[in-house]
Length: 140
Length: 117
Image 1 (tube, helix red, strand yellow):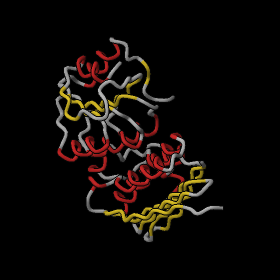
Image 2 (tube, chains in turn red, purple):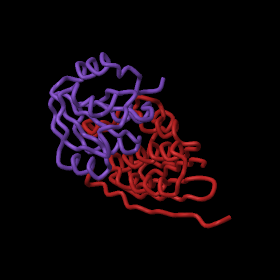
Image 3 (tube, chains in turn cyan, green):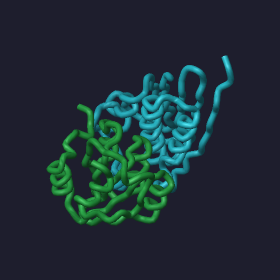
Image 4 (tube, chains in turn brown, purple):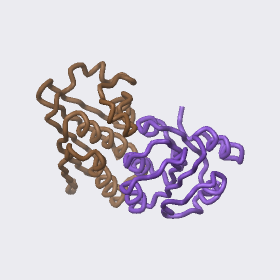
């Protein structure tokens, strides 16, 4: 097994215009590595939704991406309010996003379903008051 | 339909030229909700939107959408212009509404759905 590539980003919670910077950089790296366009797009959509979520719901966090011979793993970690009812949050259309997020074109309750749709494997660990860890895996 | 022709049909202003105005576009997607665009958009589509936000350009970037039209006379902000230029995305603005923009393009042959079922 040859070496893997690791990327790590801080997600600032105070500038919504910057939301997506980390995903943009990871996407660029995936393209440079010559991964299949379908793999790149699946990863891009899922991680972008996760990044947006961390910024709007949790005031920021971190995004880490690891690429090896088999898969892309993206872990988005925050120390926000957590998700009280994950099953409810996974339903399309369920949203707790404030108005200013809707003005950005998000917050319609599509984020988590979108992640699930695009990721090959999606794992969400969340504890109320402690934060959320979203793990997205896309196989090459 | 080429991006250049789309601009002519909509009497659009070319705010950012992007990588190529000669790129052939086969399908279009009209939406203000970026999450919907991400859920359903196909490859190589035109995005028409009434939303002015850097996240429009970011969403286009994530989905490899090469051309975006802002409808109803909306003006892009400085961040959008800069981001579109950096990413090679064509950014157009038109005074037409969403409905008439879509109608005119459809009438002239841009009839494929920009979204999956």
